Length: 265
Image 1 (tube, rainbow, N blue to C red):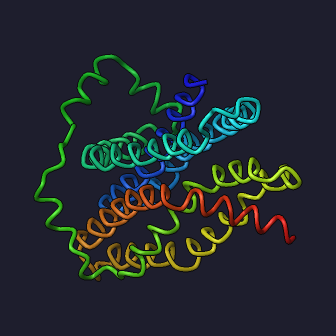
Image 2 (tube, one colour):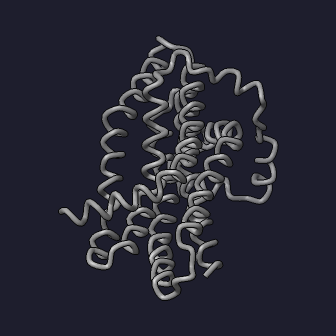
């Protein structure tokens, strides 16, 4: 079963790595004045995330089935390991971010020349070009942290992103854990991740995405400098990292809350 948990760990790592790296495409698109192209490419990265999420679901369900047949199996600790993968994936994305922004700029430029993603992949997929990609790597520097003071970025935006990330990180896991806490409403609990993910979606749609859009538009119109967007994406990534750590604390309380909710519905 440990092997199965590690596969779920890997998929969780990929999900949070890819979702966090979408910020690099958006930033590269603004720098080049090609935001629409960047957003279309970010859909490909999100496709990787959604595919990993689709494969992760049944595997996590099998872990639940195993825990029911083996009472000695510590489900909570293994779920904490999976949440740890989200932290590592987000941290890896933060470390790769400078390189990802530079490479994203190259990808956007190549897409404009090629005219389509299949043609771009065919013209770029060569061993020589992949080796040359190493020359475009950029390493994060400690001085970058000094530029991430929260001044100029709404504190509410950062705090809400922490909470939203924490909720999304544990949504499915808390529902599955809740299904092991109640025999009467086990199936209902396992399908109840929307009870908390829905709250996160509301916060994301109403409070977070509009703020990101406003700052992005002001940079595109020249009303703000690009460094404002650099700072905002930097703080959003750090808040995502903090959110994955907060998820460790919320996992068990969220499971009991779901158990209580399905009991009164």
